[in-house]
Length: 94
Image 1 (cartoon, rainbow, N blue to C red):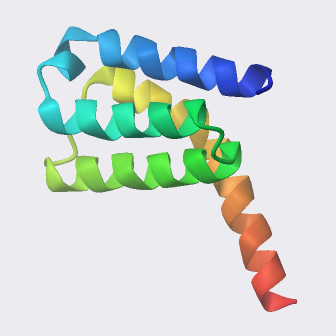
Image 2 (spheres, rainbow, N blue to C red):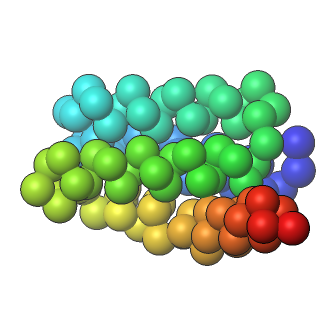
């Protein structure tokens, strides 16, 4: 694993350590599952894309509210996910 994997794993752990996240079983489950996927070597950009999708779904179903640490995590990953989606779209069309 390279540095970006370790950075994301650390960022996920910081988010999981947030008391507002610890008290939310649904968020804890989402974040823990993606942390496990990264630790098991799943592709970084794919994990970022799926995680941002799950955070978006969570926020949508909870009246657009989420702990600040989760929103920060989303913002940190949004660019990677957007690039991955764009690349996949490009391949699909050509």
